[in-house]
Length: 200
Image (cartoon, rainbow, N blue to C red):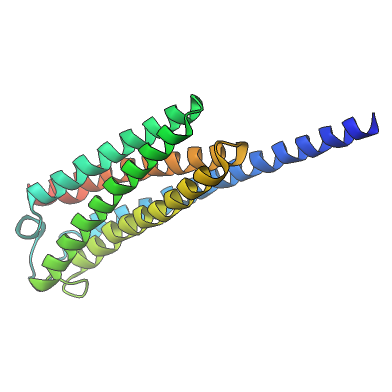
């Protein structure tokens, strides 16, 4: 009886710990919302301060940011398919969809690095104007978040291949998928506020 009670306390403690970790992740997302909200507000205020340098219409290439958007939206869909596979208990299918998501994420980062490199090569650097400083910081911060997400997702793939679908790997996979959808939503705002308004 004592042994059963001890097991129950251990399970209860495990559940509480998992619940705390989930809550901690939500707090992190809220603080991230505040961070991006501040960066968006800064960009909106500074976007006309070009100091005689190039403006968005001269810098932003429609095929580039359209491709980035398509890639990121698709990766969000594939991360959702990974979670569906997880709920069905199909670990190999889940790993496969996470790997596809990682590949799309790498493609997105590749496009962004290419865009930044071309802009810097053309003389449009973070020091050129307040507009470009705000642009590089906002878009670069999002890109950094995507990179962190890719490392995180890779770690989960390794854990899944070793341990399979457990309570811990389920929580981690769900959190990273939620994080990925959040980055997708942030990108839609970047697409609208930075790129579409920039080329108009």
